[in-house]
Image 1: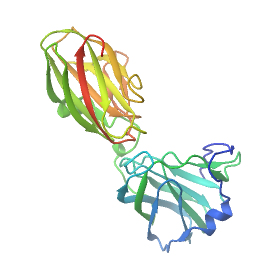
Image 2: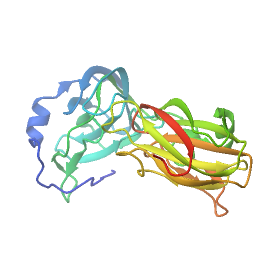
Image 3: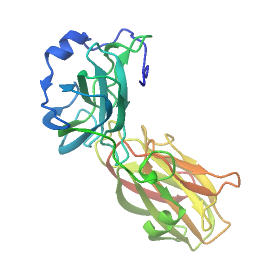
Image 4: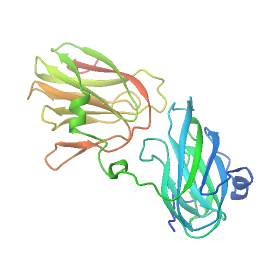
Length: 305
């Protein structure tokens, strides 16, 4: 049995709920080796209770059917928790192998009984005490979704690269996704958008110099967090910034664009961050972006005005 202590119980600004209240408000999900129920969740939680007649692996998946405008995000970022009848946390998943939707694949069920699945949106997490039992929720969820919750007996045979143990976008992906942009020593602006993945610009430098590179987020700002990475033509590190711009946007001052004629400028959404090897060459981007926004990428000589 897996017991994960996410956080200790602490005072929070939103109303805490007892385990009995969670169970009393849960939707009954009929389950006979397979079951499905529909729900919706925004800043709170949605709970489902079901009976398991025999031990073995169990797979639970959140399939988002509608993305709505949340407090801060318009995305599919669900969080999924599995508890036993007494409120002991057995397993949880934030960003499943398919992206922002959640999947528990083959969680071990050691005995028949009643189990409770809870769905929230990020960053609303179920808290547990030092023994691993439910102890309330922390902050409100910032997305809003409708979804189907699918419960099935057994474990899925997923390819190894579905799991969060390696880069989702490697250097070859950067090259394939690149949009050509010419920079000739005068300010240039290109518009783009990014969500879970990467937005890449192959910058052809006609007039080598140090330049400012800025991400200007044009979508409603709250909760939009860009990450900016610059590579040379061979994929080696040139510059990086997370929160150096306006609010949580990115800004790099005096990026060195003097050593080659081609650079790759990559915009991602936090926490989709670059990973480099010991020689500072890009391995890949290993996370999944948690927000969805449009932006302007601005490259200009000298300090930004």
